[in-house]
Length: 248
Image 1 (cartoon, rainbow, N blue to C red):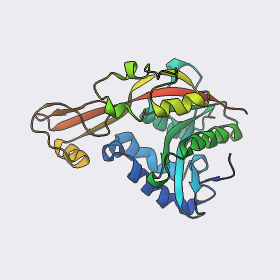
Image 2: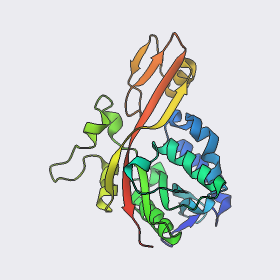
Image 3: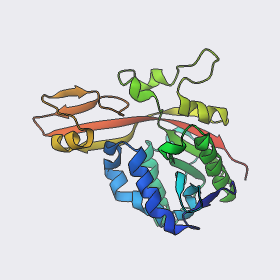
């Protein structure tokens, strides 16, 4: 791992700063997956050595990467559904004493004042180093494309095939992974599933939903489905599974 990065096992006093960074950079509705509520806090304790943090100055968190080890047999069929699935499997594997084979990224976060400095690439490199140091043969990631929210009506299956004139992936975050040698595995159409009442969705988004239907919501990668009759809203966050090799 890069010497600039530490883990939350080494610096547990940084946990609250990392939590605040998550709140700052994630859309509010993304913090309301049932699986997120159930398991995310365990990353800071049971899996602290897999959470990488960059500080500048030494006591101020400017970037962080969340990962979790899991058992994966290397096949597409055995891939979890996405972020929800990998988080749930990683916790279950640890509880059952199953030896992990793989590290999965969960999130890479850079404080707004420090973006566009290449820190997201550094986070991925730190994650790969963590995987290698732990004897894990791959780093997989349910990648959330950063510009997909601008094209919410385009199916993710089409979006991931978009390229720039130079042949590189159109999406900047997919491009970062690709430049580091990651391979595309498959689309994860239901990486995170978020449900709530209509009032909750109005609180999370700052919008009003006067009738049943599909709504384009800021930061959502595809429309949110609102049903007034059942007083519910549902959103499925689509991601893209990618795999990085590591040197063990």
